[in-house]
Structure formats: C-alpha cells, structure tokens
Length: 237
Image (cartoon, rainbow, N blue to C red):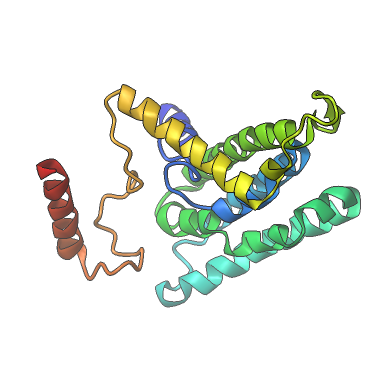
C-alpha cells in the first residue's frame, strides 16, 4: 500500500503534470477563468486519466507494439466521449464553458504520456493510482490559478461577489492574464525549490533509458550519454 500512496503523491507533488512536467498547459490557460470551469475540467481529465490507465494496463500484453499509440487514442477517445455525453446531458452550462477543450482531452499530453510511460509498463492497481495522482495534481494547479483569476478578474468566487464592482482587473481574465498567472506559479515553484536546495528539472521522472519519447533517443546508451553530458555541462556552469 505504501507504494500505491507514493505513486499517488508523486503525481501531485514530485511529478506534477502542469508545473513539473509542463504538460496540459493549453487547457490550464484557457479554462482557468472560473473556479467552476476549472473543477469541471479537472474532474473530466481525472476520470479519463484513471479510466484510460486502467484499461491500457489491462491490455498492455495484448496490444501489438507497432499499433500501441492508435490503440491508446481509441481507448482515451472512448472515455472522453463518455464524459462529453454525461456533461452535456446533466451539466449543459459546464459543457458550454469547457467548449472544445473537453473534446481535446483526447490529445492531451498528460493522458497519452501516462499511457505510454506508466500504464503500458505497470499493473492495473499502480496505473489506477498514477492516473488519480496525475489528475489530482492537474486539478489542484488549475483550480488554484482559477481562484486567483476569477477573484481578481471578476471579483467573484464560484459566482459569489467578493470584491465590489469596479475594483476588478479585467486583463487577468484574458490571455495575457493567464500567461502571467502561470508564469507566477512557475516562479513560486522554482523559488521554493531553490530555498530547499532543489533544482528545477522538467526531466524528473525520466531515467533516459526508455527510448519511447520520440525526442531523438536512438537507443538506451545514446540517451544515457546525452543526459550524462547535459548533467556535466550543468555542473560546470
């Protein structure tokens, strides 16, 4: 059970998909205008992550290696379709707020990345907790940013008036405000990591040996050599 809890906490803190792995940022910037929309997006992504991870882990020994990516996309698209149908039927206002970004969960880097890097290599239970941890980590970040943007940009939290009319900063709700809030969150993360003597490194969680990321790694030896050279350069600096 300790391993399961470590996997869960890993997605929330050590390998947070948004702040550490820098994935899924488009939906964070676009949907974090309201807290309700952010929570809805976080819940939808978490459901898809958990469901896709479990199914892909169950089928990992059956899916042919050459067609694994198309198979992953089919599985992910199935769960996204379920979410879309449920949200449209029971929460039409949330469906309109999320817009195209609900359907775009199919190609969200977090979902496809965890399918390839974790669910494809681990048990169903571990994959379940990995998807849950990543989903919670994503939700925490997008909701935290949404609280700030809605409060400062609209003067409300979940639609309830907190700041009187006329004191809002409208640009916070717009695209520049989204980039500013995301950048501020990243800056705070790096600041606190530096205070604890840790170095920010978006490669956290990658041992450089899988060769599956498609970023130019020809084989395990070449990739390991590239990482060693990078670490040596960083040490010299």
